[in-house]
Structures are given as C-alpha cells and as structure tokens.
Length: 152
Image 1: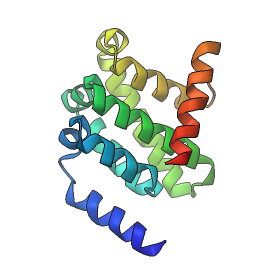
Image 2 (image 1 turned 30 degrees about the horizontal axis):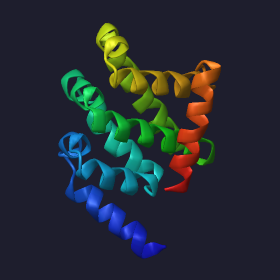
Image 3 (image 1 turned 90 degrees about the horizontal axis):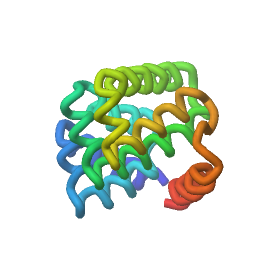
C-alpha cells in the first residue's frame, strides 16, 4: 500500500534525469518496468516526459531493444489509467502524448524503419487515436501485452 507507493516514488525520484540510461540497460530495464507497472499516473507521465523532451533522447530510448520495451509498457500502463484520471492528470497525459507524437513526426522515417522504435510509434498512435489501429494479428499481441502490463 502506502509503503510501496513511497518506495516507488523514492526510486523514481532518485533516477530522475537518468531515465533513458536506466531504461536502455538490459538489467535495469526489468526493474524500471516493474516500478512503472505500479506507478501512479503522474509518475508515469514524468518518466515518459523525460524521453519526450528532445528528439535525440527519445530516439535513443525508442531505438534500444530494452528502452523501447520499457517505453511501450509505460504507455500501455498510462493508457489503462487514462479513463480513471482527474482532469489535470488527463491534460498532462494528453500533453505528453502530443509531445511524443511531435518527436515521432519529426523523424517519422527513422521510427517507421527501426525495428524497436516502430513499436513505440504504433503504441502512441493507438493511444492518440483512442482505439486500437493495429491489424488483427497485432490486436492479439496487443491484448497479451495489456494483460501482461496489468499483471505486473
């Protein structure tokens, strides 16, 4: 309960400014995923905002096999929480998704052709569209990912 929230908050505060490096690390990325799976909406938004601040940082994160996975899991978690957010959190999430979309559009070819970044770009598109725009095969995989995100 409260102790878990405090621990998550303290760890996320401690890694502030190092999110990209930690998410891209093979060992640390697994811990980041576990933390973000239990994080509050504002903590998820803050973690992802670090990635969306500049094009280079976001592309570095999304092009990494581990960083892209952490980012996609965080986006899935954020998506699952959006309908339960208050107005202020929802607006912050919308702003974040707008910023992430802008970064993706700035380098669309790079995101579309990178085998890891393309997953993040598609996830942002699904959330921004408000519905699943993946192909039927992709939908089954998406359901599995959402279930996995909810279990952690």
